[in-house]
Structures are given as structure tokens and as C-alpha cells.
Amino acid sequence: MNVEHLKLFIRVAATQNISMAGKELGLSAAVASAHINKLEQTLGIRLIHRTTRQVSLTEEGQDFLPHAEEVIASVEAARASVGAGSLVPQGTLRVSAPASFGRMYIMPLLSQFLTQHSKIKVDLRLSDTIVDLVEGGFDIAIRDASLNDSSLVARKLAKDERIICASPSYIERFGIPLSPQQLSLHNCITLAGMDNWRFNLGSSETSVKVQSNLRTDNGEALRDACLQGVGIAMNSRWSVYRHLQRGDLVEVLQDTPFISSSAIWAVYPSSRLLAPKVRAFIDFLATEFGDTPSWER
Image 1 (cartoon, rainbow, N blue to C red):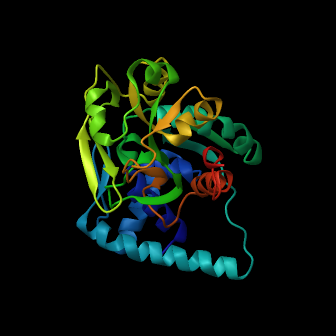
Image 2 (image 1 turned 45 degrees about the horizontal axis):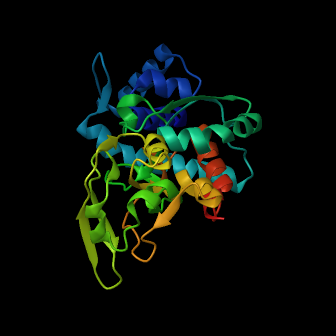
């Protein structure tokens, strides 16, 4: 059984795209398809359903996948034990990231990353919509949310602390809430789908449905409206920490922290046989953010 055919099969399972998997391994679409056919012939079973739009594993393919991963993991371990080098990170790395976080923290790092890895090209898509990695053909997604999809593997890069802020001009005009319940007396700017704010009261928690005359789906737009004195807003600390340092924004309700399960995650389809370009990017981000990201220092 050809090890390279197994590697290709594992990447096809992750990407659900024979051409994309082949490209990752330096193969043309025709050669990749031929390799999969050869593997199926060797095993005497059909591993993949093929359609005009995508491919998916057959039941036999799903059963075979963990065994293929185990074989490759053993081969890689054997190579490492005798000092065999790993593949050089190369190819196009397709990354999805939230619009605000991506622009503020991913984009400034790309020059350094591309200098370190001259054989990698990055295709970065910035959107606050949570994408389907497999369907969208992404290698990795950066997410600032709680994770609900157990089929994905995630590496935590940093905390995503949410805090309540207001501008000095807003506080001068309308005062400052002294408890979560007093938010009902104020105008709040909200992110779409986040009208209920939960707070930690120490021994208990409370939830407040805030009133808003402005709702947006973009974190930077939310922050900018807060800076302009439109209302009180819930922001990620990474988005507003410089404004807090300058006094352009004031953190309120510090004694009753906002409850959130979100964090900054690197999310990818499989932890085994990661393409070298994906592993390189994840390790790079983990090193750059470190234990204490810039917004927590």
C-alpha cells in the first residue's frame, strides 16, 4: 500500500475536494484522482463518493480513515526518530478570520510570516460570518466565539474578554450605570443577536435584555459608535484597549464582569496529518500572541 496514496486520501477526507488535496501535495487533479483510484483498487473497496460539486467518504472510507491516519502517524514518527526532515511549508494557505480582529491583529503579522515562509501564499478572507471550513475550502479559521462544532479541532490562541464601555461624552450626558439592572435606563449599542447581556454577581448571575437604537454586525462599527457617544456597548478588550488607555472610552460595571465563553481560536478540520503550511501558521500565531497578548499587557 502506497504511503503517498494514504496521505492524499486523508487530505481528501479533510477537504472533500480531490483537486485541492492533490494541489496541497504537489499533484495535478488528474494524478490525484488516479492515485485515489489506485488506492481503492488495492483495497478492493470504494472509499469516496464523487459528485460534480464535491466528494464525500463512503461508509467504508469513514471506517478506513482512522487506520490510514494511524499508519501515517507511525511513518512520521519513524522518520522523526532517525532525524528525517518534514516537508517544507508551501502552497496557498486559505484563512478565514473575523473582519475586525483579522484587520487589527492578523494582517500586521502576515509580512513577518511570509518572510519566514517564502514558499507560502496566503489567501485571507475577512468576514464576521462563521464559514464552513470544508465547504469553503479553508485550511484554517480564526474565530472569536465559543466552539460548538465537535468535528473541528481547535487551538486556543488568547482570551476574548468582553467588557462594557461608554464614552466620556455619553457619561456626561446620561450618567453611568451602577448595576446591570440600570442598563435598562440607558441606550445600548448591540451586536446582531446579542441583546441579552449576562453578568457575574459573584455568587450568582443575572441577564439583562438591553434596549438599543443601533444594532450592527461589525465590532469596529460598534466600537466607533460607542466612541461617538451613541450609547453603551459591549466590546472585546482587544478592540478597545488603546481607547481605554487614552481615556476615549471608560469601562463601566467593572465589579460585575460580563459573562462570555468566547476566546480567540485557531480552528481546523483535522489534528492528524496537518499540511505543513497549516501547522506553520498555527505555531506562528501561538508564538506571536504568547501567554499575554498585547491587549492584556
